[in-house]
Length: 325
Image 1 (cartoon, rainbow, N blue to C red):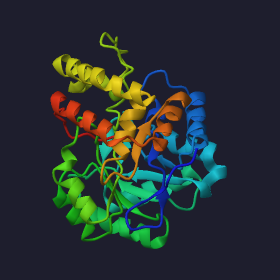
Image 2 (image 1 turned 60 degrees about the vertical axis):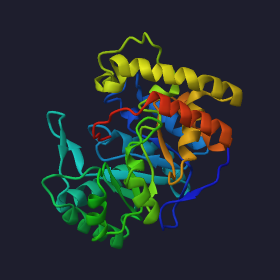
Image 3 (image 1 turned 90 degrees about the vertical axis):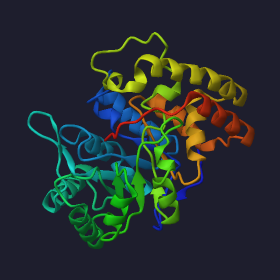
Image 4 (image 1 turned 180 degrees about the horizontal axis):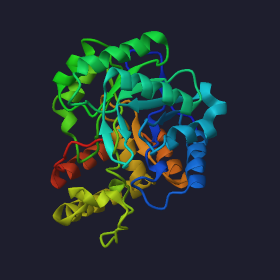
């Protein structure tokens, strides 16, 4: 499969419009995850034409996601773009720790390089702002890593105000932003997305399928596994659950007419949005990433996009809490 590559910010790094999000393969909040299936999923993503793999220091209690990328795709290192993140980790009790002090960022970067078995990380994110560390201090060490060649470009994730972007950028150039964004969670369109477009910052969102909901494969009477972390989010509960199923029922005929799946319709809509460079599609089984990868080849006609947008208005937005993934 071939797709048109897109540039990241003002860099010379080019990525496919669908990226594989490598959080689910760790199995921390997903059910039915096996190591063999995770390895096969990485290979399937590459074989499907995806060149962009998004991971993080905290994806896996012991860096399992980064290690699996090295294992499966190490022989193709020069053919792929690897994004990783720092500033979040797990303590001995498996509790998430925010720490973006310069010395921690340096350590996370060096350990990620070792896990990935590479001499550079193509795109390196501050995973989330650390309330105890001035964002300028974090930015300084990113500039240091950029100048040293350990990383090729800098991104910021889970920044919820333009002010934070500006403060970070005053110290270190930003190539990408990684917020959550999908058909029903579009807060970034108010100020962050316009700021990114104006300042040549690529937007590479996570949750384009709203943690799988917009793929249309969860039935109205879905029975939740106690280990499935999605059920804690309001969109998977009560009236919000029903409203989204009604919305999906409106989209299904549009997908059927186009001869594509609901997931492909959703991802194609996302990567055709102005300012969106690539969408992170999480997967834990090969068939999942094979399906979403095909969205790179789909060009939705204007009439279909109009119908989708009208359905989105009828559904109304999902009230979002700041998230870190």
